[in-house]
Image (cartoon, rainbow, N blue to C red):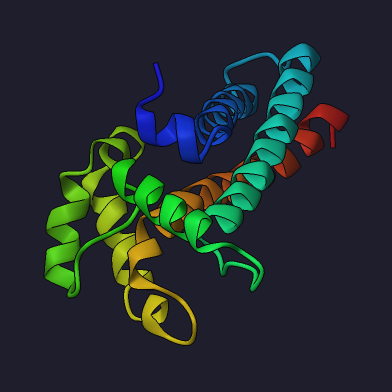
Length: 171
């Protein structure tokens, strides 16, 4: 059952995670040398990879809408609603330094449900300073970490898919 954060902000995050996880599992099983290659598994994994990528793109679009810059014509009422909505659903990070972010992120139930503490810290260390540059807001760091996790999974799936295609074609 998705938690409130995932259900409201990223309706496709869990779908993407599930599809990509299953696709990775199927591709890895398909690529094992001790397993006979089944074209059904290959095509199922490929279709799950496509579904996972589509869900990722939709999640990215939703995140940009809810956390990106507001248009000039947005009313003050909408601005207040959006700020309250993001705060109520614990989407925004409240930390101001790296150590505080590490503590906050390792206690976030949604983040720890989708990745290990080491993965969280690696992505946090990677993006902490760049998230403060330009028009980016440090408060949006949680969303960036989640989307980067999905992006990494998508890259891994595409690499496995290339290897599986070679095996499928018998090369």
